[in-house]
Length: 218
Image 1 (tube, rainbow, N blue to C red):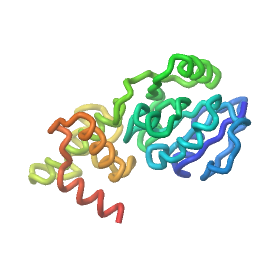
Image 2 (image 1 turned 45 degrees about the vertical axis):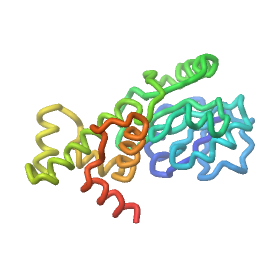
Image 3 (image 1 turned 120 degrees about the horizontal axis):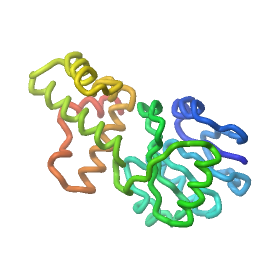
Image 4 (image 1 turned 180 degrees about the horizontal axis):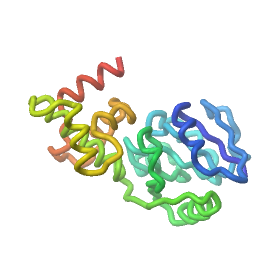
């Protein structure tokens, strides 16, 4: 079974911790020139950063794509690129320690193909609703955002917040540690996408977080 992996190189390094026994796995930074008929599955680790890849995937409807779809939705990608062979997934850095993969799917036949593939790979997964942020990235991003509001108000230091969260919730990281692992620009993108989709004020981005995220981008 041939699997093609594309996207962020650092995420590819983390992905190699997963089981790929019995698979021929190839990493390519760019895939627009590759004939995908030779591959059972493509793993796109950065699809929501390079959504144009979906136009290439649409040309190979029999090849299943497991793509990072956290800052958008499958519905949006399918509508724009007419690519119905994509399964949404959380491939963001900072979540590699999670044994259960969050996935979303819009088509019954594609879901059955994924179930068979996951069984062969022995990957644990949980199906979540097709919404920006999925579940865990959305929750963690909200926690990070609230932590930034707390620092902005001068209530506590970053170090104290990180320590309190790890001691009080048994989370593996504090919010600022997690934001560093995920990438603050990614956290900003998640919050922006969720707020746009929901229109809810509770997803309003802390100005301090936004300022630091833009500093990273620049």
